[in-house]
Length: 261
Image (cartoon, rainbow, N blue to C red):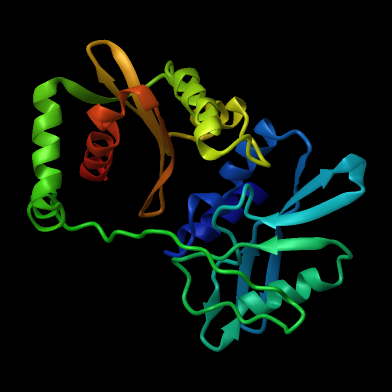
């Protein structure tokens, strides 16, 4: 009942994302056994909000952080603000006396900047948000450049295709492209996402997660994991065969994903 109440609450707020939900929390716990769901409700006069939190214990519990959200995606309270009530400030107050470090990641769909106490360090990041036009024709003619439209036509003529991988059969292949990318990125990153994360997304995502795969003459060129929930479509992650970069599968993938959205 708690999970249903939480996600029902989120569905009433356009700023909420999939990464605030209990569905996402269950995915994370399946992929990261050391992670614990520590989400809380926030209350203020005339306002109520959810705050997703994930307790991450490392070094045998010597270092514990609270992440909202994990791993470093959108988080923060939903709603962010009701009238003059700033729920971000309530979230910071609720976390201040917990005796551990915390990371409260912002949400680009929420109104207003985070108001933080002086002792709280704030950093900025960037994301890209596209407001979808009403029809695919408007997207094709009004958003895509002439060069991108020509790319789509050229790659289609070359035989590059994009399909939905309904059963996730190619998830392992796409994950292998991710691991092969480490050398090009300059080495192994500090946090390596396990293959189990992507498989859990497809298995436990309740139909909100899709895997798109690009192919050419029977060869997998790459793929992207896409999340659709509450009116938002997130390009969660995409990985490609570097040896097939001349076929630019990412161009066709993005066009198909946006067309479906």
